[in-house]
Length: 193
Image 1: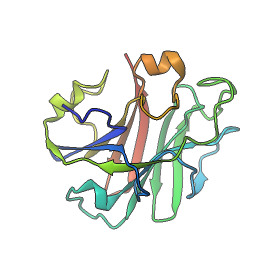
Image 2 (image 1 turned 135 degrees about the vertical axis):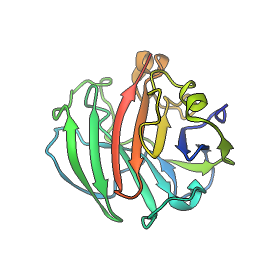
Image 3 (image 1 turned 90 degrees about the vertical axis):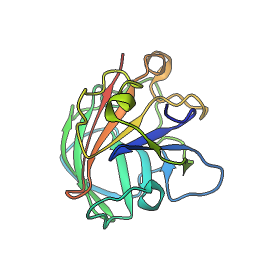
């Protein structure tokens, strides 16, 4: 079972690395301002949100071609039903696709902030798991593992902030990131009950 209180979990090569709230500054973080240069497709007027930034040191997994030191996880929280794909290097993100391209002023709720609260993340010891067992913990994840690395971010209940609003959090809206380490490409979307 995934670590209770995990803000996100990373699945790779039959292993799960849960990340929980840390209490000291960390190279891995949930939320916070997006400090990378972002270009590519056009979207707006609301900004994309940094959901998390993961340090490769914390992942404790053997990534091929792991020349990057961090994985930026971006998502269009103010874009209803957002699907996004992007590539990245050490300092820049290139958005290849985003749908929809126009944000909603009151989505997911009125006065939504431009960035999520910064919370340091700490990895927990990796757990050996099958994709099937891991996927059963979340609503509507694909039956087959969709990418070499899959990162899931369920609505957190322990950070004093609602990501999706009362209804969305209660429905378990989960952001899914599919990451290809060799291509340094990420595809993100959400699933719910």
